[in-house]
Picture (cartoon, rainbow, N blue to C red):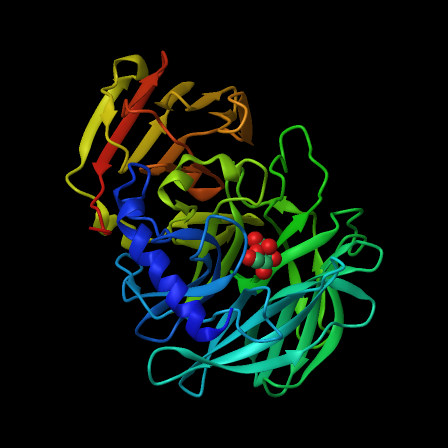
Amino acid sequence: MNTNEGLSAILQAVMRNNAKAVKDKYYPCWHLAPVTGLLNDPNGFCFDGEYYHLFYQWNPLSCEHKHKCWGHWCSKDLITWQHQPIALLPDEFYDKDGCYSGSAVIHQGQLILCYTGNVKFEDGSRTAWQCLAVENQQGGFDKLGPVLGLPEGYSGHVRDPKIWQYNDVWYMVLGAQNLDKQGKVLLYRASHLYQWQLVGELAGSYLGGLADAGYMWECPDLFELDDHFILLTCPQGIKREQQRFLNSHSSAYLIGDFDYSTLQFQHGDLIELDAGFEFYAPQTTLANGRRLLFGWMGVPDGEEMYQPTIANGWIHQMTCPRELHIKEEKLYQQPVKELQQLRQKPAYWQGIADDAPDISGFSFELEVELFGSLTIYFSDTLVLLIENNQAVLKRRSVKSGEWQSRFWSGEIKHLQILCDNSSVEIFFNGGAGVMSSRFFPSEKRTICFSGKDTINLTTWQLKNTLL
Ligand code: FRU
């Protein structure tokens, strides 16, 4: 895409489709979604002391995984977001097949993006460059070009740089695939942003006690949290288990210790980050001492292209922003407290689940204290069953019409559920487990409860931030 032609094509697409998307009954009331086209990974999530910036993989021209640009939103409160000028277009030889995922840092008062320039060749092969871009006076970004080519011993699948600074040294984790088709996370180091040195493999398939853990690890993110280190990663090709890693690509984490003097990461087993149907490519940032996360509420799979929103020219959305903590060696995710500002008047109810009042509409938050089994019918396409220390989320596939299930195990005492017009995020026991999923209900818009045990319910309708 040449810059001028690219911008004008995007403007046309936005003008043509914007109203269509926003009027779609499935368009979110308060989650971030594209005004037109396809959204995938959160990118460049950062806080500049006043504003949160969230960039995102965006194809403004269609609902396919093509022409990846970086869209840009910013916000003072993580609730209301303003559109910013499009940050990156794939208009250079080194990023012509997509400005792929990456991260952002604030350095000497300037916002700097580090992203993957993806280049595909006619024979089907590809290469990748890790590139920089710097904010300009107009709120756009000037590309500084590639700072890193492919490392020796790896395929063209090397991408998604996450960079940070520690004690005046820059670090980068990078997703990679070696020539034996094993997924890895590479660690780089630099004394300034233009000159990176490969330290080695930080984690991956056949490393640190892991056996075959997939052919490619995308979107790594390494950070310290509550006296531990967490490596987020999206292993592709990991073996499906009976109740875990059931999506076509998974999002997982390793918990352990990273030592800045030896640059070694000791860790345990891969743990699934979110057990729902749609969650991928999360990215975190540190803001005023809080570790915050956005995820893509989508998965690159054969189902996505059957989602009904495509008819209205848009597809996918982000998760809600979440705050992370570690308790008892496990990662906990909770919706950020700012989201409570969306709550309208609370409604309380207590009794046997079968007698609970229905909830109408889809933009609501629900807290449930449970004392046994419970079933929640979200629609004709989504049901949550809680029984015998297990949650099963059943959803009707948009592709085949068949019911499919996702699982979370544990003694479930508390649920926090955030719902929007076509999404649900279910937090079990204060965030010990999460399920994020899209669903596309038919016209009937009521949520009902069933069960013989007692529940305590608090319900809030949520304000629409996108009006
Ligand atoms: C993850 C991903 C990244 C890549 C981007 C391209 O969803 O495949 O690895 O950079 O999407 O849009």
